[in-house]
Amino acid sequence: MQTALNHLPVSAVVIDRNFKILHATSEAAALLGKVDTFLSAVDEGSHAKVKKWVKPEQEKITLEANLVTEQGEVIAAELAVGWGNELYGEIVIFEKQSSINEVTGQLANLRERLSETNFELLSEKEKLEEALQENNRLSAPYIQITDDVALIPLYGDLNESKMNVIQANVLASSNEQSSETLLFDFTAVGSIEASGVKMLKKMFASLCYMGNEVLITGVKPDQAKRLHELDIKLHIEFIHSLKSAVRKFYE
Image (tube, rainbow, N blue to C red; front, side, top):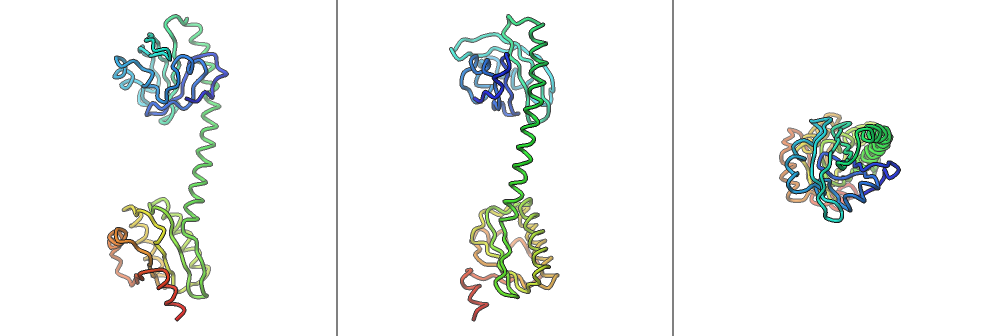
């Protein structure tokens, strides 16, 4: 269990909607022990109650529940729960002897600190999205083999989000390079989702309308079934292997 909020003098955790503990104060870690999910620290008799009320739809709520300490002792606690968004919830844990004045001050301090944490999480999320976009762009490099022929090897699983990036890159590169023949190699492709098939159909149709010849190679049997769904009323040639395809242009 992470303890990124150890500077706060209160037992508090930040969880996701599946109760996974994302952050915890040192007080919470000492109280609950090394648990990955908050439900693991909830006594079995309070499970149903916590599952019912600790969720984003409730936004803010206070409830009582029995918790199991690191030493295995069952204690009565009051949980102050708040959700800043659909992804992250905050739980402040008060053992029954805590006073109302202490509760108010600690909760205000916690919210101030957690707002800084949420900003850091948002920044990391944006960095991850940028990395995924770059990975999608590199999943279909446009390689000019000759003045008229270009090779586009595809990598990984093909879904709608990846194909959106690939389509934009391929159409732009094809227009700039004025290649007449485009060879798509599926050797390194994993699964092809239904949304990926639709985007492939759209991309191939656009290329054919632009006057390009489209060749496909390296297709596995299970992928062939998916690609059969393309049903494009245009000429697309399938070649057994990349070696055979390259030989076609150098004979």
